[in-house]
Length: 514
Image 1 (tube, rainbow, N blue to C red):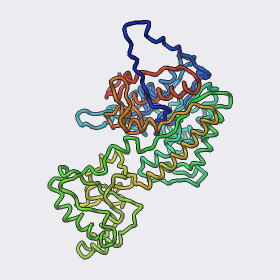
Image 2 (cartoon, one colour):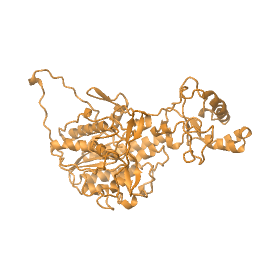
Image 3 (cartoon, rainbow, N blue to C red):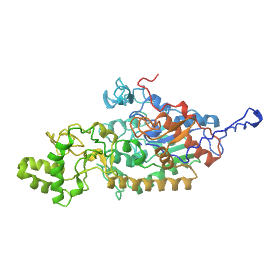
Image 4 (cartoon, rainbow, N blue to C red):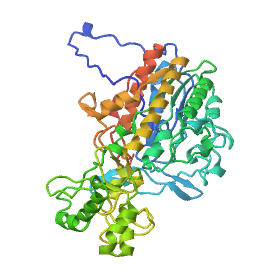
């Protein structure tokens, strides 16, 4: 997805209790391909397929991506060489003509107790074109329709956003498509994990894009828009048809709800504890929350704001663009006490403000903005708010990019459901292995997945399943994806591929990777 977290069956690691009698030890099942042919495996998808992790694409992450893990397991059943368009190093990031266009990967800084970029500058230059065919065709940032878009790997289109820098590094020609380069390799087996970015960019931007349902021309879409479900269905069907035309087998995976990703579930809607606001609650109630509550009540919107509590955690202040704009009414109400100019400023800031609710999703990156001073660029009104309106989430509403409100969440869910209907239908019609990620994400979010003496959950930084960007899996999470893909492949094709040991994959990468 920026995602691939799509799996068929819940992980069930079976623990065999064996006694000392060797005759009771079950014989090891030989690895066979069944009806699948793994000679030439090609993986198509987005950042998940590419092995993106910790907010970057880097060599070790690519090695521990689920396609490479699968390829290693396929080798025991006749699988061949699996080539990857590797980044230069384990720093991560990208350069375009020497300028940094993507930063280094993150690591967990034990001193600051926060994700921090690793030291060193990116060295992977987009214009240093890679030659040859690559089995891993995962492209970070790709949406479904990008896989069939001519020129998506054209270096000339990278500066304007018309082309993708990751694909531009290894596209065979400027005019080719991801699908064409995959088909040119005559794959006997493929994995297709695509569609996450068709809703994810909208979600991670706080819903600042547009739901394009009803618009059948993806060339007119913005980067943060939701793809029309019919467009997705047409593209996905064409991908599967082309990939299976010569008899290739494959595995496809559906999409989890964004509400199960730690990027959207880590920051609570009400982190403002009395301890955090010690000495501030009474003045804030007297100078801001009280007057706002009184004025909004007069306009029939008193439920938008409540006084801050001295005993319980308080919700963040947010802007909700779905609310009726009461800027003019608030300006009129505050003019007698604040003066016309200041009152107009308050009206503009709080006209659609409310306190967050449990049904809102606060972005993970927002935690760095809470209680910091809004700037002219991120205030939403083009000026830097003066004191006392200089604290994001407390005295100044978090903006649209910080929050997903229920109407936006519903738009994402509706599109995801439609995409998933298509994916499952295509899998059945083409006889492909199908992986249900929603089931596994539910497991990770509710109790976790157990293996050995460990339990892996979706908890940010400590759960083991996700990397420090809160969206992409960790190495261990990619190992889990590989195992679930293997379950689906074995079930569909009668193969006996083996799981990998998740304990051998790290939950986090260190600052320096050897």
